Image (cartoon, rainbow, N blue to C red; front, side):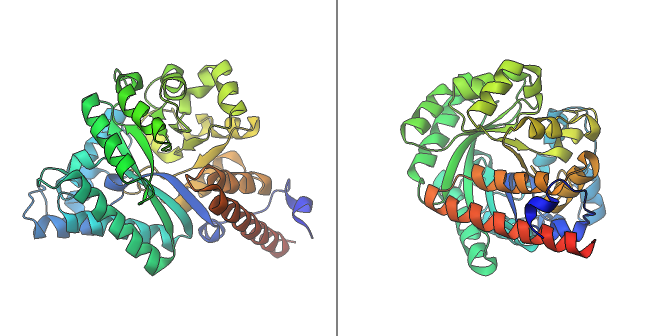
Length: 361
């Protein structure tokens, strides 16, 4: 049996299959992906008052997986996690544990994004903040084999001068673990074009760009990200379908979308999973990737995101292969490494699907 014999078949696939599937996670926020137990331990160590000292109380405060009225409401959970992420040890530990958790579900490559400016309450320098996270990820790679890179985030609703400082930091750490630059935060009424100085510096130094756009605002936000700020990828891009001409441009230029299904439902970006445009984009040939966004705040894993996509959109083997390869192709990796990675992912996914097909023959 060959892959072409099964690529359009309907094969029963369970959670264990998606756990074994080699995966990428290109859109995951460090400060949204902590372990609840770690938050409590860090709070105790650093004498941080969270308003609770129990897992149950912390769960109530953060509300993992809770439905929110808007993106801004969803972002309130970060106020808790950021309180305990203000020391070098805490940043190292949270980065290491995130990579460990990802490796346990066979994520092979991950791009961790966060904004160093949000971790300066303890008077750490931006460089020390970045170095702490990079050290945690490096040690996790040695321990678990997971490859990773850091994406530094500017923040839409903070001064553009801060974005410029973070862009300078990204340039300084290019080839030292930083693989890209992002613009995150409250999207509505905070246009990306206000941060042009940061993106001019980033692009002038050949640093990769991904921008949150089309999540809490319409396709004009995606237009700005692509045409003003030179985005190589789009974070979310959920509302791209509202502008067919822009959609075709994004497709023609193979600009990947970092889709986060569970998060988009929880932030009310889409009304329900059934109404999510993910399968529509995939069928049109857009380079769509699956991602967690925030493992804690969203209460998800990459395995769970694949399970949901399969359940709601009735994936066939061809769809699974495409998404896995899209993740590898969209990674901010050097071309030579990316070629090897794509081939590895393709072969492993093919073998897994053929194995599953034989089981159900």
